[in-house]
Length: 89
Image 1 (cartoon, rainbow, N blue to C red):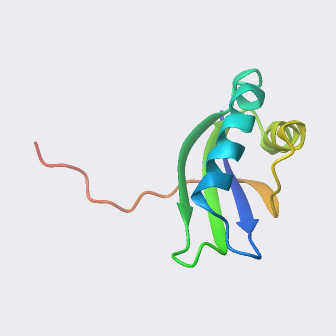
Image 2 (cartoon, rainbow, N blue to C red; image 1 turned 30 degrees about the horizontal axis):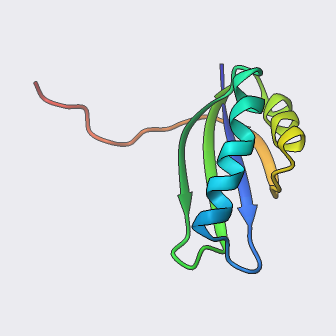
């Protein structure tokens, strides 16, 4: 699976209600395409956001978003660099 980033720009700022609606709309579209959301982050002013996914490729994620009619700025494949120290245990 590839590591995929979805970027968002919101004007006006996105609301919790809208995010919940989009999440519900995306669920069946991502599920049938074997796309798994890893995490989402949004700026404090709710004008920008990023979601991280594991998916077959970026185009599969784009198709899911388009099918669900959820807006996005861009979708791209990435390499993940995790700089956290390994646990000592």
